[in-house]
Image (cartoon, rainbow, N blue to C red; front, side, top):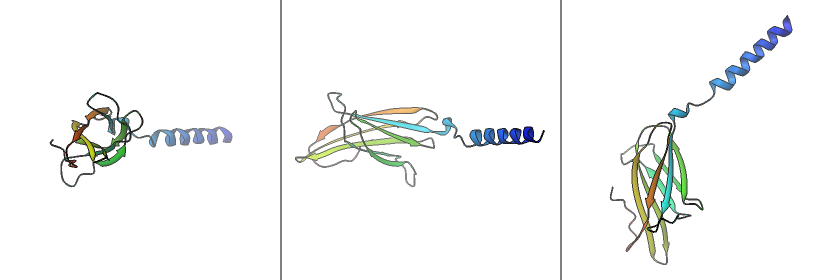
Length: 127
């Protein structure tokens, strides 16, 4: 009888620990940035910045695209995200692109950014 109580308590403890520590997937706001050039070819090693166009925000991430032109981020609140991607300078040339999208709970939103060559080194977004 004593062994049964110990096993029952151990079982309850395991159930409690494995279920109470899981995060709710619906509270996550995934951001998948794809950077391409004007010919729709993926751009690896582009610098990516994700931010909210408001002051005092926590949505502020930086990263670099992988070989397939992707950079993945995750946020924990609803927001309108602005993405800026920059490649270069390379021989005096710089490529810049921007896009924006509203994040959705429990969904990984894909934001495609098309980078274009700039005649100067300005990296500002006109969004």
